[in-house]
Amino acid sequence: MTQLEHTRKGFSEALVEIGQENENVVVLDADVWPSNKLKLFIDKFPERYFQVGIAEQDMIGIAAGLSFCGKIPFTSSFSVFTPGNCFGQTRLSVGFTNANVKICGSHSGIDFGKDGGSAQSIADIAISRALPNFTVIVPCDYFETKKAVHWSARIKGPVYLRFGRSKWPVLTNFESRFEIGKANVLRPGCDVTVVGCGSMVANALKAAKILKNELDVQVINCHTIKPIDKTTLINAAKDTGRVVTAEDHSVIGGLGSAVSEVLAEHYPVPMRFVGVKDRFGQSGAPDELYKEYGLTPKHIVKAIRKLV
Amino acid sequence: MKDYKKLEKMSKQIRIDALKMISAANSGHPGGSLSAADIITVLYFYEMNYKVDDPDWPDRDRFILSKAHCCPALYAAMAHAGYFDIKDTLKFRELGSPFQGHSSKVHLKGIETSGGLLGQGLSVAIGIALAGKLDKKKYQVYCMLGDGELDEGQVWEAVMSASKFRLNNLTAIIDSNKIQLSGKVKDIKPLNPLVDKWKSFGWNVIEINGHNFKKIIWAFKKAKKTKHKPTVIIANTVKGKGVKFMENKWEWHGKPPDQDQLKKALSELK
Image (cartoon, rainbow over all chains, first blue to last red; front, side, top):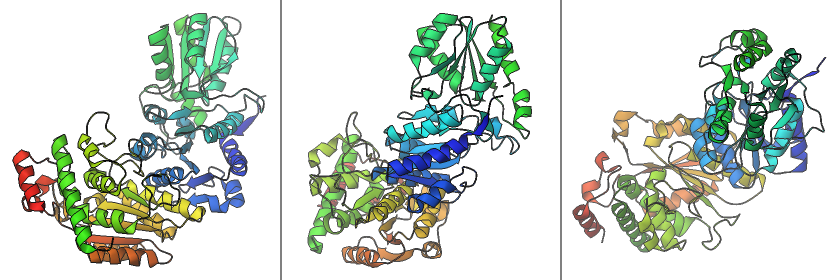
């Protein structure tokens, strides 16, 4: 059985690692350190940790100011709050100024679960992706989240890093390839391609397994939403001729939109979009919500069947 | 330059150049540029340490113009300080110009952040002040806000942060000209008691006449000597100051003067 682990754990461990490597790394927190497991960093580097309270707009602005003086600020909150509650600050103080700020949003998508629809971020990829200068990363597991933090510290410029609340299947390992802007083909196949990000990569692999006796399903982990890996996507469309996208996010503006923008221009093929279909979430266990909102492996299978 | 006559002369010139820029662009914000001119003059010609040939000098004092629509006054001050030629600023608001409609860090060296959405500057100033503390730098951070801008909730988040982090290297200045885009501050969203508000948030508060050079200089000096807390200078100013027909009129918040009006305004300032 696949091991499960928190992406938040990867986030917090990596912050300590980059904090050790680079004394310019600072962490800002909007009152969520227990949720995002920041104790490790706080204990080790108390002078480089800034608790700003439940004030995401202020936090993003302060981070921008710190970055203008050579610091590498990582802001920590839930993705519904950052960038959700501070779009104007994310846009101007960080995006417009091309500030070296890393906005890290956990508890993404309807996977957040019982806190309900108001807390479930389903538009954060859309709004961050639309901002010039931003890199948008959605890792699929614990190891990728760790690597995404390391990469974010190395990239110069604004980053939005999105991860989850639940324990997600560990699909990669310490040595797996992870490069910003390069999607990974996790499973080769010639009949249809499923492009997933975040928690939905695991479900895409499960869908491929369900269909293994009838269809050869290619599965791509597209962890960087922006800049998106055009080459890998176009090659996949050429090889299989059919593409399904899968994300725990609205189908408007997220991974599916990003993939279709590339393919519509360069190599149009029939597509289906698995994601939240233009509705808000609600309270419930994550697995119940995935059933209700159409994000299970079975729903991906259904989308594939519609294409073939 | 603690020669008040010289400062006065400079601030007049800054007003003249700001109006010329706005007129050349046929677009911009004269009212707030004129109310802020005297304070900006003191900052650039008395108070701040900076090097025009090294705008990124790590030890420089920083000025954040949070009410960034009043950048014509800032551009004029920077030109006379030697950052660039005053003639260049006539490209204000033109395509490809570094003199953007709202001062922008990525377009012009010497600008410390990008403005245009009110309420954001003080948080950025706090970040710069925190970095100064971390790096044990001696620089001072100045941030000018409008009184209308205080409607923005982010300002009060920032007010709490600066106080929490005991940022005595941060001085906020309120250009309190009592008028915002569509009317009087007291009608749109009353701020009083403004001094008590800032005091209750843990700030050192100094209230002055924002057109009196002696008082402005004195206030900055007191701010720098304050220990363990940030200072706010509430500067009572006149919107449109120096041009009688613009004074205290919200209609001159964001309207350029026509040629006759410009002529009349410049003759008053000369």
